[in-house]
Length: 612
Image 1: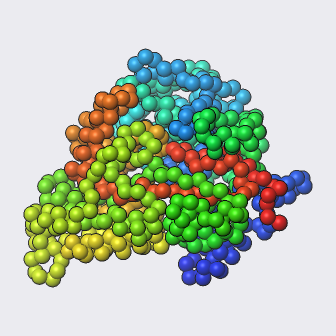
Image 2: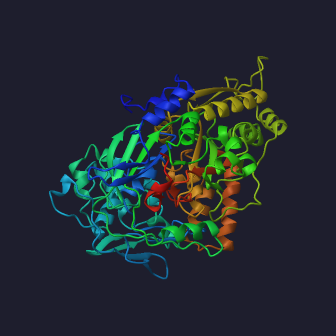
Image 3: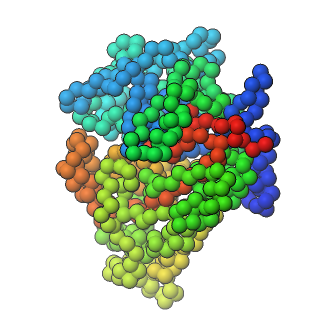
């Protein structure tokens, strides 16, 4: 990734105050409403990502920061109500809800006529309407080996008839992917009607179609016009278009002049005071309400926080944990912030932070009892409660399993293995991980050195987490080396299986908890399953869950799946974050999305409240 245009705040040598000043100067001076060329006042939403993006092609991205941009450019068939809690799926480009066969194998969706892609030279001067064939093409791209899509495994398990055969034909015969070859399971039966046939019934397939950040329609002309640069040339039907991009530095989007007429609609629960208040302010307003969105990349928490306090940003998504006790002491918004009109949105996030073990690694991988004992001992030796107190600053709760809050299958009564250093030592002793030469460090059962390596990020929080882990493993008598690199490098290494251990976070993309279990599903190895865990017993449970409707039988399978992950320990789950987002008084309508990433079109800037 080029560093020529890196945002100045990424240079840690800067003093905090200088860094904050650099943040304020990264954007044009002045308030968040600017004068357009026509002299009208533009509304600009400004905030920061804490990690760099990778690009903007739905078929090729997997990181949450890129996926926070793409749904504002590309549109899926279905999306989420911005205020409904629990989450509610509703039509986006679809004419209505899908027609579904009684066995959940055939899904028919009619697309709303009159939706157009934003203008681009690839269309050679014509207005390009969105049609059913665009979704056929876009879904096929996940199967094209050329794109090495991290989300291929997720699509594959849905069992769209004919797509896997098309992919295997490409791999076997070493020829280009044939996008013109018709497959039984994915057809445009007329200009505006898409039909999807699945090998098995999928009662929750609607959640796949509502994958706003990945399942948006991409125009074939654009991909073919920019074959090598499609990651930096997104063209969709959504409310915004990309206007400027400096990698790892600044992302600027503007209102899409070709966007259709759409108004703010939502259905919060009647007893949802916050949701009802937002609806009362915004119902019927034309979308999007802001003209421009400017996103900075600031990986250090202090300048990101200071920039918000200095009113350079309208929003801080996830108050840095270093400042959590200052901003929200005891879970309440600090009086000095409340007096400024700042508002808080706080929730236990549907995410988890975990240690991933590479199951193909010769030291920590494998299924024999000694290898399982090593992984479980490493989990038992790490005190998650200590992490929550010292590093997370009480802005997290212990994670007991792979399944995250707010999703099906999450059981608040389920308990995984907790901290138990004595038991961890006993396990290693039992399986031959002992100190043979008296130097204070354990060796492997065959007498070879036991030295572990974990991939970690360079920011302050990850440094603190690495230090805490190293102390825990020191107490266990196990050497640990910390390999520091940027997140994108870590992701590439993990996908290639070229790592030993990795500490990483992941957020749910839908209300179905089975998505979290995909991390241990054998066919997803190298994709969602970064551990490369393969266990037939787990895969059987997982496959059975896919075809069952929600209910007690499926819930019992959730428990089985959790127990198998606990037993073999390809992952050690640490925490679910308590996330606090703060909004300036002039930002109207913000509410943290749970399973989706787009919200820019649903917020407004109240220019009367802007600082002068």
